[in-house]
Image 1: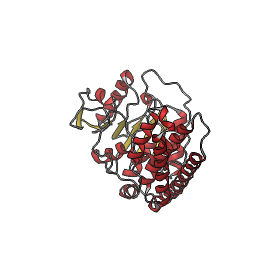
Image 2: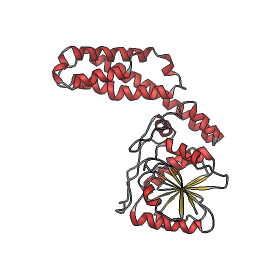
Image 3: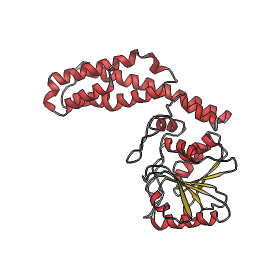
Image 4: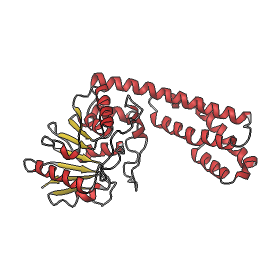
Length: 327
């Protein structure tokens, strides 16, 4: 097996200097590409359905190192037959690996649709294919995604993201998916009861809300301003046969939160809009204790609320998950 790091370093050295393309570095890069592709063709474990993590890394490397770098080597000249053949072999392997994943996700969606697979059953199902310990203790300076996100994305039956149809108010934040590892962490740091009602405020395409329902088996409601996103989320939940997930197309300032007990926000808005929504949640807290879970820059604004007490984290970092309880 050719180590990816070795290939990456060689390729980087080649493309730092165009003059090297006709020299020894280019020859070495081509040789390493050929060896790497050969190792993938011979690695039978890569084609076993259970080895999703390994397949995801190979697909990513083929796409962004092998194919792209071969194209760079070919740029401006007539590509030699060897490079054309290497690229085609890379494309063929990538297509085969992606076909395995498509079949896997079709089968998993059918299993969720017919037998449920919520709670521990769902977590165990995911752990069969993805190492849930990866990045567990690493907090990036910004939002970070990994193989777990690729896997959860694959459970969606619809891969084309709809275009927004409404303009956002100035204090609204453009949609960004919550990293899947954060939702897994949320369920650990914020244990749920069967009668909890979870609100995802700014639900976007619905992935976080659906994931909470699959991991915890509780009622989940997503509030989403953009109609196209809301329709997409509803279709995903319907395809997976998840009646416990509801998506409401509404401005967060006009939503009904009265039955909620846990509220999640990945910085869907800021400023006065955030203060108005927090005021609404405070009214809910007058009749029962609620929990608010935040991720991203909104944590700092939520932490200023005197009616909330932060339980986690101990360190102040916008991309640590934060859990608050009403006093």
